[in-house]
Image (cartoon, rainbow, N blue to C red):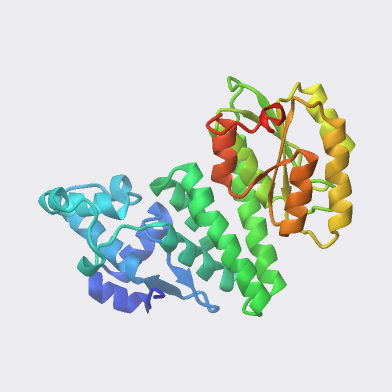
Length: 316
């Protein structure tokens, strides 16, 4: 069920906070993330109202708004009533105080995209990092959000401009995470790219971050790169793995040839992973070439940490 939305006057009556204070907590402390109408009026969700109610109780109990503004809903419940949380660590939806989960952020992000609200989308993604690990943000929020945008574009609910706006914001967000994740103490190097003809790189950025979380040093090369360039980077950097992300598969034969060329150029002991969007027949062809197809980012993560043997020499 979609979250209801309310204007600031209604929120003020529900929370006992003045509109001025609500706006101040939003702007200065990012305590809530209201959506905006086309005329730039704030539209608050039920979750926003719940947060503001709990924040008011926390401040009245002596906590500084700067310290509590970005706490999770569950932590705010604990501040308001520690005994209640001790009995029920995760408040039920019937209580009206359910903790924010990934689906809530997907809904907020989709709402921002439908309204072309880049600021709200940026804040939604940044706020999600307060509540969840980087892997959960990528796998539980960004991937489903992109899938929802893609489905809406296919059905005509969203325009191409919506998809481009979402991609631009998410690309910047993931790029920032990748820069922050740089770890020169990490182990083996993994080359991450998209092959020739593949111009979308959001999947590749997510793959690079997954490699980093698995303890590898990702070298991200971007999109639309010829096989010989990817192979050259692997040789130069003594990489132990290469991962390519696939999105557009309209020219399956060209993509198949490019992947076959890449497999031939790489040494036999270097693992080559692929994932993304591809029809079953192409996945089968890639597997026949010696590429390891990863259905999900989790599959790729598990493969890299060695929990599943996926080396070519180990296959029969």
